[in-house]
Amino acid sequence: MSKDNHLPPWNGQSGDTFREWATSLRLEGVGMCDKSGSSVCNHLDGSDMGGPVGPPIPGGAQQAEMQRLRRTRTQKGYSLILSNISAEDIKRNLMNTFNPLQTYDMWQYLVAM
Image (cartoon, rainbow, N blue to C red; front, top):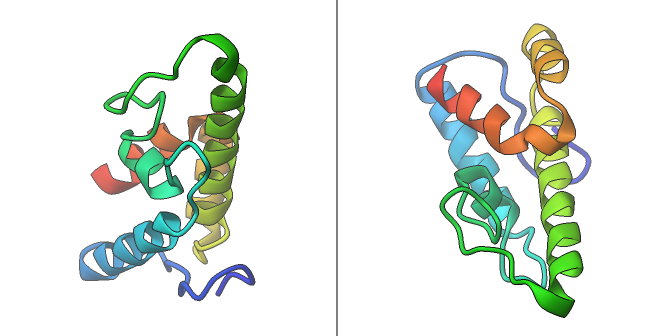
């Protein structure tokens, strides 16, 4: 279990084990919201501000701040996922394949497994 939350780590098993873990992880991410109104869960789904299916990041004075918040959500999501996987081979593969700014892609890869 991660020291930051109460989510049991995923052991790499597919099926119901993964679906239960993914649901719990997403629920943990819902509580990780920032002042843009987007959460880590929104980021994993791509529906956060600036995400593939989310509202665009506004221009002007808010743009730099909203971009910074999105990067922070991305990095928190990366940490949340990796800190809650107990299967070292899967964790190592994810870390070798995706960097902290590719969390959305990493999540899409996991749910497609």
